[in-house]
Image 1: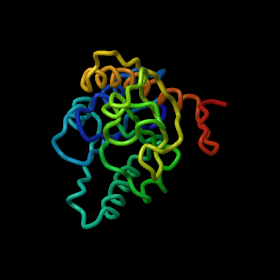
Image 2 (image 1 turned 90 degrees about the vertical axis):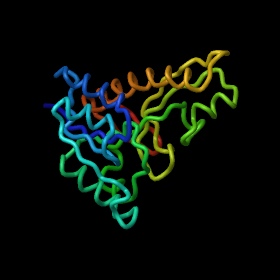
Image 3 (image 1 turned 135 degrees about the horizontal axis):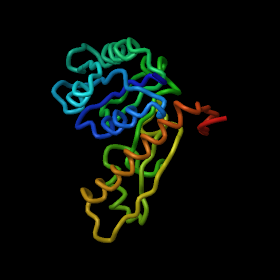
Length: 202
């Protein structure tokens, strides 16, 4: 079966779909065993159901405090015994309980070349800054906002006539490919973290 992946998502689920498709090849070395969400009725959950993958939903509004929600999310994720947790368009910041459980084995993607342009408006910020090259990052999740150790990056050229939707669409294509490639390498070859440096393989 290979490594067990739990994917957390909040929306369309295109990164999730790319992982599901990659896992159909036994040589990839992993299987998505569950998909979690922070809200019901999203397409990511539909994609999981169509692929025969278990789902769970942990809504923030259903819990008295953010800490209670974080504990519930942690327990729901732990129930599937993941080797790696992938945040694929998951639009909530996980808390300390989650990080204590999955620190060093939870990855996220970001549509910029970190540490440049962290936060929710990375593509807009890159355009406003006038950069000629931007891209995407796969990083390990920590308590900061897009601040964890960088696992892999890919660059995307900025065209003179780019607007935010056009540039973001090209970054998403690169992001899906980078995520699939990086997760595959991590589960097949292993990874180590030394301070801020992440190394895949021995």
